[in-house]
Length: 251
Image (cartoon, rainbow, N blue to C red; front, side):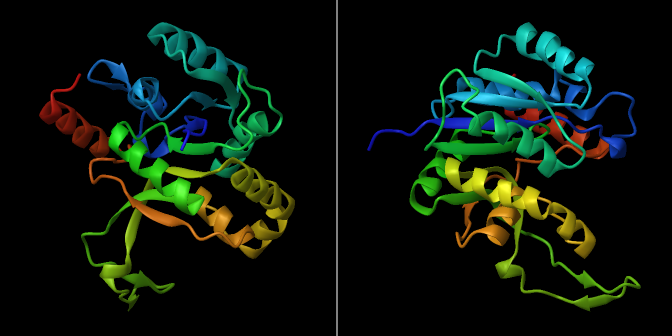
């Protein structure tokens, strides 16, 4: 079967308040390269991904910096478009999906696959991308993740342990999250139509799979990612990432 076109949406619009730094976490240096470099490098070298939409911060200066200091400086040729992010993660994803829906790319992706990835997950690999591609071919929607190692407690409003779910059924969700192009565009269109109602209900959309789960009948397949596929959120995560890169000796 001929490979379908694959577009990556890389989210790098966050400010990283939990990092306690004046520098946004995607631009912090990890072994002399910005954190965002690692995800974009994996995409650039991938045989799976054909092109990329990069989501920067909300200001014009954010887009200019991303273009000049990341894309141009490091020669990332697969980056087709850089768009401004939004207030919430789902707003940022929607802005990128509009580029695809409007065929506003060098090569349209009308019936391929969309890989949505956090730009602050630097340990994306070709193996993860391959497993996700094979899963989305069969199931139309999939997310990378790993079974949890720890016992999880559900707390009540006063922070007492209220329930202990079966650990064998729990996965820690990662990215990429991968979908048929029409499926994810349609899901986000419906999300935007219902956004105000969801906010009033207190329903938080924290990943793309939740959008597909809520607005379509498509089940989302869980695909093995990697325990090393960490998201850099706190200073401790930077220390872990440094250690992982040193152990790998890759860069």
